[in-house]
Image (cartoon, rainbow, N blue to C red):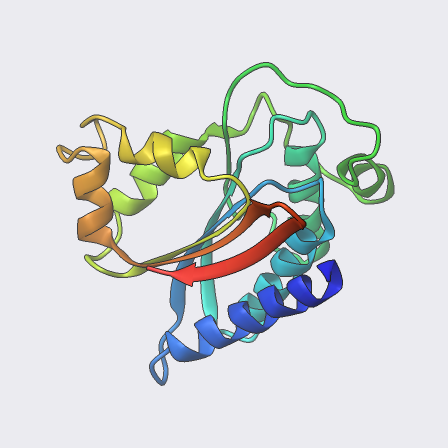
Length: 196
């Protein structure tokens, strides 16, 4: 079941990029992830890097929900592996923790990385900076995991980047959300994907 859900996510990402891409233009997207706990985030990020290489999307940033200490270095290692070390990574700030079953540390142990959790930009500020500098209705946000980063963006106040609050900034700049989610049920969990 989990394997089928991962395939569904990859098919959805591929279809989203094809469907949202007029001829000769790149989808400008932000990838919001809880990288490290499940393989779907790594697979989705690998696909996005291939789309960047094919000129099908412009990956403006990766937003990390996880405060696991190796999540940011793991994302940086993946970016460097695919020769895109300059893609900014934003992270939800707070106290870090280590999870031994998380796959971020093995990635960091196997591949070079330079960015640490402490040096990564704060996620809401990075969202606001990128959105404020973007054309209206030009951004696609793909979320794979909890929506805390999106909630914090919605609740954000005007700042040096924009006079708009978070909700108004999203309404002005974001063309589409693609949200992958898990919903608990009595007999287990189900995964869904919605576009908004």
